Length: 116
Image (cartoon, rainbow, N blue to C red; front, top):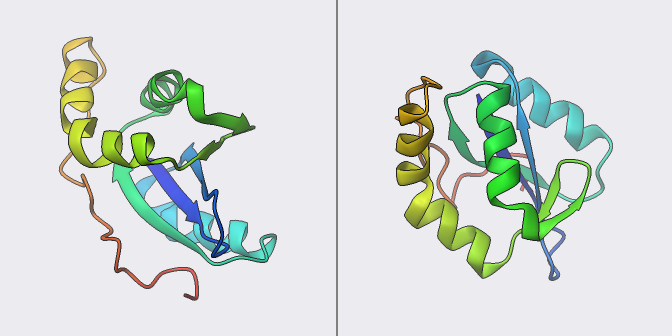
């Protein structure tokens, strides 16, 4: 599963970690990251997929890459997540990587994860 975990320090810019783990490990990954972060974290988006899908998402959003697997969550990135991720997933599926993107927007913006 490819996940976006948002770090919201209450000031701009906000960042998200885009990573990959087993679907049952997303919440565990969130807790582990939260231990080392002074700001609230929450899962804002997931796509069923593997490391190839993760790499493709990293390439797609490379202009907003900041460090490691952290990306600046600009209006353009949020628009991509909200408007184009399903099409992006379909394109990856057509390229031979198979996954179900039924978890698109699984976590809504109002979800209260990460202690917020």
